[in-house]
Amino acid sequence: KALHLADTAYIDGAPRWYYNAKKGHACASGYAKGGMASVDAVKHNANEALVKRIDETVQAVIHEHFRHVEKPAERALIAGFETDPGLPRFIQAHARTSNLEYKKKIDTSFARACVAEQPLTRYQGERLEAIRVAVIRKYQFEAFDELDQEIPTETGGARRPPGKAGDPFGELEVETRND
Image 1: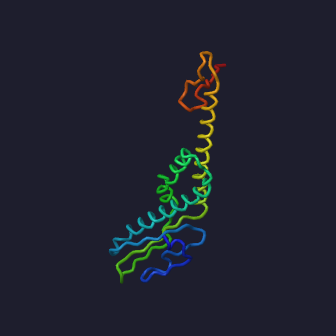
Image 2: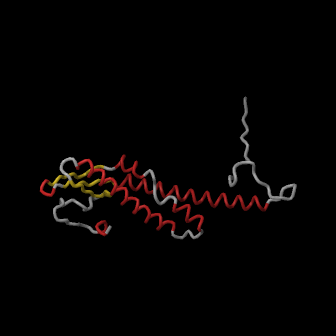
């Protein structure tokens, strides 16, 4: 993890690009022992490292944007978004192996997988927007539930819509016309 914070890293036996930044990209490096057959494994390792690195970065961004949230239920809702099960598919679609090298002397393959800044920024923005919408909806549903509790019905109890519990639009009926 400390290597991610360094501007440059030089590791004896590894290629000079290993663990070093690439301008305009988020990158992660990987290695695998075992001859030329390790080439596919090292690409997979680099992609997995990139998933982990992006997930950690997004978790930090989520914390930064939503640190003001104090209610336990909302914090739990936000925590549910911290790990995105769709991230590996995003990496598969957008990551490119920018470097791949086999070092025969040490019988090790090295790879670097990178995602360009633009699709990554868009992806992070979409995740933040999904969290923002989920939190707003939670506030809306809670507000409608509170209002429903305050509105008396003819029998003296609170009015409850026939739809799903907590769904403020459950009682709306759609009128269709056949003209």
